Image (tube, rainbow, N blue to C red; front, side, top):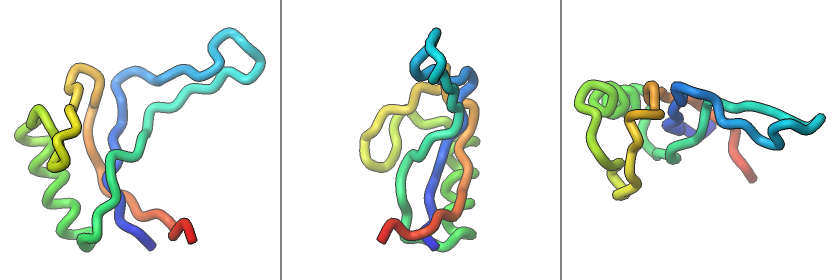
Length: 78
């Protein structure tokens, strides 16, 4: 299992809006981490508390749309 950091948006993102294939999603992958779940949770707690403008990799965070970050485990891709 891989430890990942995800985020939930305040409003869902629509895909194929107005079609029969319309779907919405409000949970997205932010990044993979090689830290333990406990270490990643500390990092996420700090992100949610301090609300920095950017992630560690300089990716901007739109706090007007991001509700919060959270840790999840995901199966390996390969």
